[in-house]
Image (cartoon, rainbow, N blue to C red; front, side, top):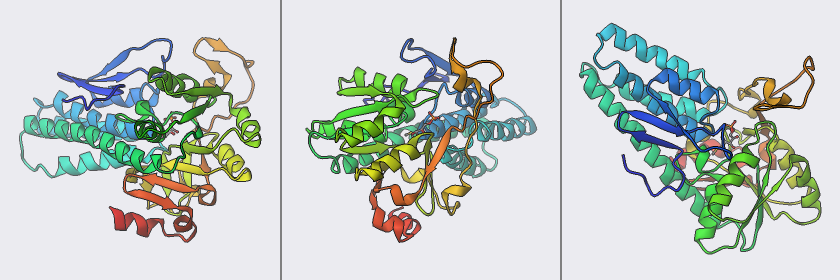
Length: 355
Ligand code: MRU
């Protein structure tokens, strides 16, 4: 399995198993977790070893391939049962990122096209497909990066929320891919990463990625962006997304909506880097996007550190929805979907024309 020149290998195939950077430990420790079944990949997605919509999709594809490989010497009934429960486990690992369901659908369609082929052949073909999806994701991110880079002026100070970087994808990243591509194009871009409470993807992951590559980055807490915007210290916002509804409403990490409202208030462009696989035309508006509620412990503290009292009532919605009207543009691998298209309800038609 080739490494496509990625500096950060979020997921990699090693002989007979999948390895993924354990993102729960970054930036303090850098370790890979090994997976050899659909169940172990589903558990890694659920517990956020791997996270970020495109990375979850690619990991799930490998989970299907691993299950076929694990069961390739079994009888037909056992093979089919294991595959079906593997799909089920993966599909219930996290609800919001539509890339997960997109990837599972693609793998299931392929599996069902094999007829009476040997399980060995099926396992090998599914693994090839997972490799292809990994490679495709990097190419898509590079294409998005090129379109997005053109939107950023030289010297731009760009805020991002959560981590939509190489760690959230197979490589290069979506929002952070835009920054990488802008820098490759010779633009002087500096990044403002907000912490992204409660799981701290901004502080732990975005800051880590940027520091690794010596891309100028300043870390702020989530409640500082309004102050910086008011003082004219932020020129643009670029974030990723887990699911975009047919009307252009954008689900992304909790806190994105606050940033979008602030950006609108201050006339700052708010872009969403969004591969076409993240657009879910089956959901008419953001109201229909399933929002994951995660373990209250994530709000009480992080790892061994606790700051809230036992017994306190807690909410932990992991995503929010930003209405399309606040989105300046969706940066896709096929070009930019402008606010005018979103406002006119033209996203579905745009996607059909560009798919
Ligand atoms: O809960 P996470 O860390 O999986 O949330 C990730 C995000 O919200 C990202 O912005 C989104 O998945 C896009 S990643 C390219």
